[in-house]
Image (cartoon, rainbow, N blue to C red; front, top):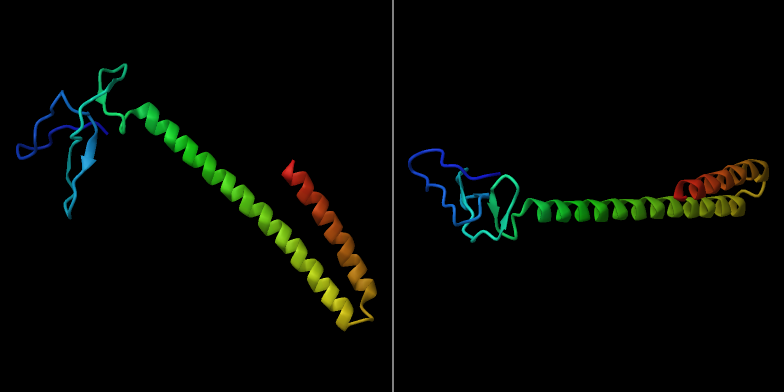
Length: 124
């Protein structure tokens, strides 16, 4: 956001500094102009410091979004693997404690195999 003077109590725009409007510290809701000297000038003539350069900000935002998506993908795969493992453990315990439940367990094992194949397709 480009800084502009909203009222007579705020400092006027200084062209030797970065054009970014920075949030004031404290309890107020005001903004002030970034105190750094400008280093990059964009096509519209706005001057930015290295921290507030829109191109660099966009690159950082994209990298953070990609990292967030990768993390969510890894967590989803982990949840899928652990749910299949937990289901298998539950079936093993059921077979151990209820020896006459073989016909039901066979049907569930077949569906778990289908579930694992579906999980492999999702990963691709």
